Length: 358
Length: 192
Image (tube, rainbow over all chains, first blue to last red; front, side, top):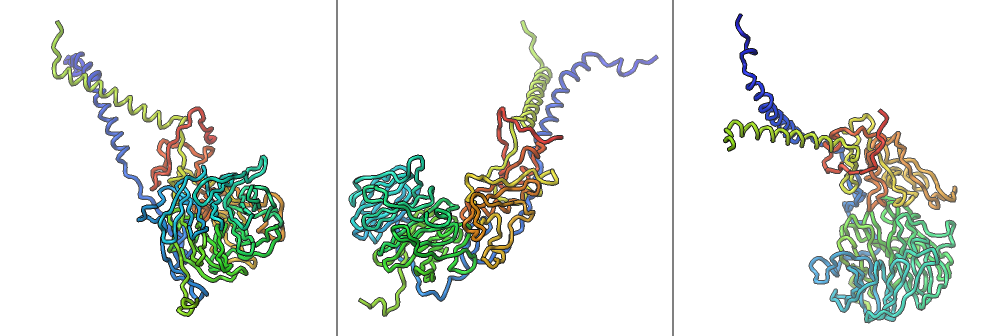
């Protein structure tokens, strides 16, 4: 009887095959599997089809797109005349820009990079000093003093930047969220977004009353937790009511004087989105300047709500959630874009007859 | 005196070591992937709400759902994630269309109710997860600067079947599906 192959194969050879070659083959197989897994072709992502959007409305990422055409037929037009702290400026803001004010001696005060910087109207820095921690807004008085708002506090500096005094803006167990400060005579008006009201103080921090709690809801509706306040030369206080899409007017004692504005996505006089206008300022001739987000633009209104001018979104970063505003003694609008960290100055275009007028 | 090893013996030994290392590494990798202490989740800072969460999940109704962060929500009357702000307005100027195609975003008035003027009310927005398919339209509409950005997409652990390789992660063009370590906080997972 002939022996089979199995019987003739030496035991040492079988052992060698099992013990030596099998781990090697397993290793090669595992490596191949890992390489195949990592090199597996990924499916091409299917992008969602873009939704048709009319011009001037929010873009695909929820950001504003510039309108196809500027708004025409309005009483006023503005043109950009200068930039403060832009990318090419030696005074550019590197980290933040959170507030702007126009004050005595024709100085523009800008809050940013944890500093308060004073510029003359040509954009040349005159002086600067360190801002309080977490400072978020500022105002300038006719006496040269600068009022800086930070969470639950207002600090007052003299024209040279020396700290004069300060006071706590909130109440016991109810700290204020100071988002804007305005000054009229001996009154300091502090916008408290936490309590949704404007608090009125004396120069020494003595409470003098509340503005905004006289309406049906006992305060402003602020979905974006931001409240801006301004006061005109007659002492009429203007405040943003963003949830209602309105600008509201009040007497210093809190008496409501009027309001204008409504939601709308197409008419230029309307305010877009969830909560606008986010910022406001007042011109020397009593016009109301508003800043909007979503469609980043600045508009000028008569106090009765008649739209006078639109400074379009082509001037601002579409993702900005604020356009901080101030107006100088010549009526020029100073608009601070916190995303681009620059202040753009817009001058009123005047007719030749108006320019020649003394 | 030790015997000098042959070339064959050297190769055999090397193959053994290489095989053990590779098998061990592969086993470790698989163990790590299937570990209950790590989960797939959406990185909201990378997510661009491209709609692939809805279409790529192995489940017929995606495990990805929109969630509302009430700390950030503005309780808006004119919520851009709820209302299609570009739709035709009614006689009060309020848009009539809704953003969510599934009508999964529900709202109710909270606090004191003013029936005469809706602008005086605060509205709470809650996602009905049984209806939400994770398309992300509301999340996109709520993004700043239009809204406060309170809505985001999340993989719900009660639904996720913890695939070894997440199908959404493979499809996501923004690499927004990430593996998050959750030591000691393993989710319960779906009832299987």
